[in-house]
Length: 547
Image 1: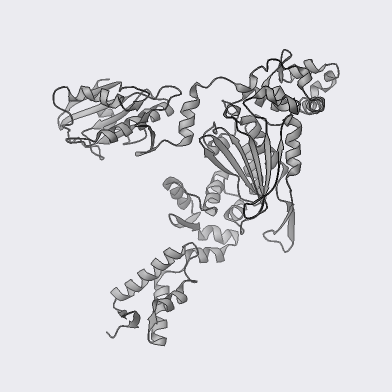
Image 2: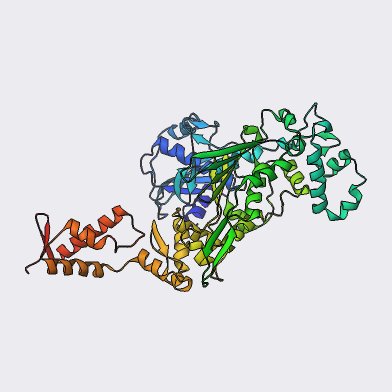
């Protein structure tokens, strides 16, 4: 395809996106901004598996060719490659720069190569990406996705030189046999004839009798943990009060097959009472379903990045929350995508460890664990699990109580709602940000009303869920109603100061507005009445107009 044909293809396409940007650049363009676009488009080409991305000069946002005189003298254009390469890491240049003589003017096509496998591209020390057509910092998840592309070594399969079966705990091996028999019932009868070495090889914990890091981690004696240095085989349980003050803690080390259950037993799974919808009798349930404790705990063990030297943490808050965290990025990138695909992940940080934990009945690789956590919480009318990702940390928060008859509980009772819908509405409940596309979808479905960021449950859903009062508190009344209250007050008492009007309206305005927004709302109502000629201000006092 010639450069002219490529230009025509881009002009006839769907417009700007993660891999393509139009700029007028009629005479000049800032080098720093050009470098940011280079970083962003190069990274996006990598993430999308494309051979190149495109930056086009001489075309406006509406895809009209306007022509560009950018660097149209001598060798100015050729020197650009070096100027970009000098501030890019890793040092790299465009695949090519194409000049097209279009009837409407000169057009430049910058064909940008994808970031190298495992190496994100930075401009002046910062990584950039794209959110549709917008230039944004590269997200931490995307950064890790690129960095992990060349990471093929599996830490967990490494052999612990000098270690032997004597360094493994007999109690842990016996428990491993019991759990293996549960997972593989057809082999239960044969297991009686297996010695420990045979069993551990078949369970894929050891390799031909050699002790792996996985074997030490799951079955090792506490004193054998030194074989994992500088990695640590530690789970820390911490109890915090409602103010976040630490009240108690305990550290657990090898063997984690045994001690993961000890961590589970430390968690105070208290009874929680709440009034079920449509019933006069309170229901009593455990704060946490056992599955939503064991699943994130065992996932943290399986997916911990042990090479970072961190530990697994379980923080129990007395206000009814559990926070599980482990070192390392979330390899799938998106929880929503994991739930949507409901299938095994094709990449694992510790594949050998994960397979051993499957054989020992600790986790399941069918890919439904996270989805099951969400469904379990939904069925209990509790908030959905909340995932937070940092560059080197994954945190999962489980809430073991109803949040003021939350949206999730209300909407989960509607049989026509998908789990994807409930996930979005749970974000509304928690006042978490939503993209414009997500908000548009919820409004199209008639699930929410209001304007960003003050979204609230819609009348349609409120009617079905019995939450009519909450809907009115969030939506409020139309402006004419509030204006009528103001005029009625002034007519009755002759005058009103701002403090009087605040006392009159503040508790009547929608609950979805904060105090600052309510104050602005009252200010706008007064200004509107003044502009209509209904009221006038004399000093600091409002009176009815004499007109």
